[in-house]
Length: 417
Image (cartoon, rainbow, N blue to C red; front, side):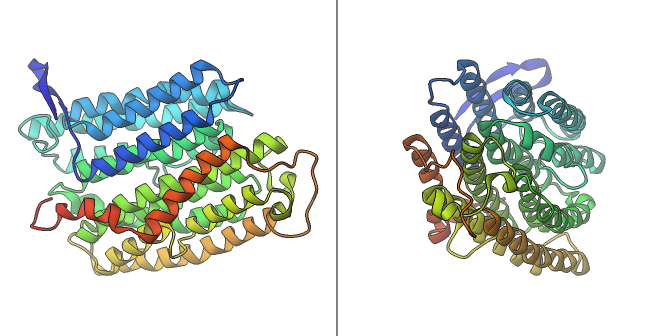
C-alpha cells in the first residue's frame, strides 16, 4: 500500500492499494494486457501500438488500485486518448469517426463524473473512497458517468462502431478492460451510497432491457465483431442488474460477471481477429461455413467462447448470470419486488434470445458444408498460446468458481462492505 501527500490544498493523496473488489479486476487487466502484447509479437507490429496498449493497461491498473477518488479519476481519463489513437490509427473502415464518437461519449460522461466527485467530496470528509458522501444529485451524476463507460442502454451507441473499427487488441482492451472501469466505478462509488435507492430502480430496468435489446440486435448482425460488441451490452446488463440489488449475492455476481465477461469476450475477439487476418473480413457470410473442417482448432476455440457467452454450465459465463438471477430473485436491499422480478423476467427472456443468436452464429461459421477458401489455415503458435490461455481461464472459472468467489466473500462475511 502507498499513501503519500499529493495535492495538499485539495486534500488529495497518492493512495494506492488493492481491495477484495479491485484485486480480481487488477489481475484480469494484467492478464489481458500481457496476452495483447503476446498477440502483437509479430514482425509488422508498430512499436507505438504496443506502447499504447501498455499505457491503456497501466491506466486501468491505476484505476483499480486507487484509493483516492481524484487519483482514480486521473487514471480513469488517462486511458481515453491512447484508446482513441489505437482505434483511429490502426482501425479499419471509418475508424476515425468511430474513435471520435467513442471519445465524445466518454469525455461527456467523465465531466459528469468529475462534478459528482467534487460534490461528494464537499459533502463528505475528503477525497478518499471511504470518505466520500455523495448526495442524491452527486450520485445521479456519478451513475451517468459510469453508465457511459459500462455501457448501459441507451448510452451504449458508441460501442458497436468502436468495436467494429478497432484492431483486434483494441477490441479486446475495450471489452475486457475498458468496460470494467464502468462496472468497477458503480461498485465502489454508487453501490455503497446511502442514496442508492434513488438510482437502483433505473439501473435495474436499464440493465434488464439491455439484456433483451442486445440479444435481438445480435441476431440481426452479419459482422462478427459487431455481434460480439452487442453481446457485451447484454452481459453488462446482468452485472448492472446485480449491482442494483445492493445485496451480497449481487456483489458477488457483479465481480464474477465482470471478470468472466473479460476472459470470455476477450477470447471471442481474438478468435474474430484471427478470422479477419485470414479472410480479410469479419462478415460471417464472407468467412463462410464449415470451419470445423477447414480450421478445426480455430473453430473449436470460437465455439467454446460462444457457448461460454450464452452461459453454459461448467464455463465462466454461467456463474455470473446465475448469481445475477439469484440476486434479482432475492430482491435485495433497495429494489421493490415488482422491479426486481420484472428485471428477472427480462433477464430470463434475454438468456433464451442469447441462445438463439449464439446457435445461429455457430451454424453460420462452424457447421455446414465447408466453403473452402484459399486463406484457410489453422492457429499458429502465437494464436494458440494467447487463445489457449484464455480458454483455460474460461474453463477454470467455470469448474472452480470459488477461486474468485472466495476473494469477494470477506466483503459480506462478518458485515464488512
